Length: 427
Ligand SMILES: Cc1ncc(COP(=O)(O)O)c(C=O)c1O
Image 1 (tube, helix red, strand yellow):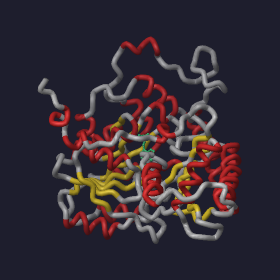
Image 2 (cartoon, rainbow, N blue to C red; image 1 turned 135 degrees about the vertical axis):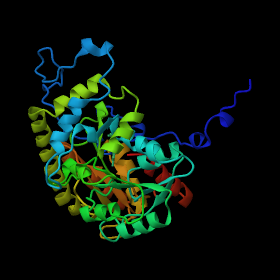
Image 3 (cartoon, rainbow, N blue to C red; image 1 turned 90 degrees about the horizontal axis):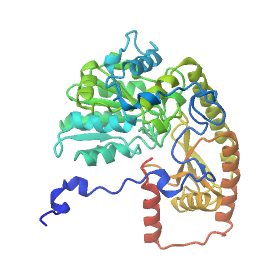
Image 4 (spheres, helix red, strand yellow; image 1 turned 60 degrees about the horizontal axis):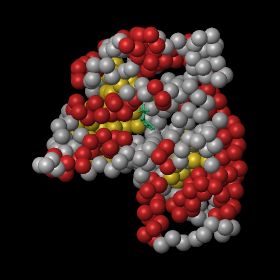
């Protein structure tokens, strides 16, 4: 048998690690409180009956055309695009209007991240630029596409702001960088990128490339923060959004790209023709109706209230350090200290993370190995009872850690390996 997968498959694909997501480590078995994946704890932004049943007199406003499932979906998704545009033509950043021709819709933002790389980066030659600490999927997608990554970290001494001067210097010296990925609000940093910093990169005097602004969490930021409509002003601005977060619809996998017509046309020309399943577009269109937007807005308000509670209550717990970054999202980045009033510690953060999950059924995310995130956990904002329980369990776990109830001292190597493993989740 001549077949040898090691010689047949592409080397960059063979080198991929299996994708590890939040739910691989701790399952949703109905008992855990899941504050690790930045999902919407209050549920879908849909006016559903209490038991979440669909149509047939159960009180739901969603009516999926099950009889039509034998037909392929609409490849153009014009109605869905028009509704997304109506939401984002706010005229805060431009008097121009976007139209459906400025849109690409995909299977989550993850499809858009990958599509952009395939559209603009020649494998083995071109590069992207990212600003760590940031969302892990840009790097995964770059590796899949055999695209190298140039990193210009966020300014860790300045609230994780972007460094447009340093980004622009890299772009000036390396024409093979085709895209800059900026995340606003950032993940795990939860802060908005300043509009003038985005503009500084867009106005680069010599660089021929795309500025991608990932606004996955934008609806948790102050009204008017989204720069989606600004795509009407720039030929090379791409703004990505998703229904996975504020809309609470991670399960339908719907992401959107707002950009100039020529870029949207490229993405639409290269996509699989029927990439958006019928049930997905039907639910997404429903979610953009006024009665369902009301539910989304009220869930968002509830999350923002709980975010305020976390911001007020966590610092009262001995061993909790500073919040790093911002609070413009549905999660917070927070330090765990080696002792009350001590220094940030990955060892303590890892112990807290592990014990919270394994002994107390509360799952958060360890981010201590990310640039500028020493000792940090990323905590998704939960519902009111989840936040109350999290605060209580966090206090108990930190008391256990400081009281020596936790067995101390794996070797340095074992500790390092555990931290790397805990940090290695794409989320
Ligand atoms: C910054 C950022 N962008 C995009 C995504 C993924 O979005 P989607 O569910 O639409 O693929 C996430 C998910 O956690 C994220 O944190």
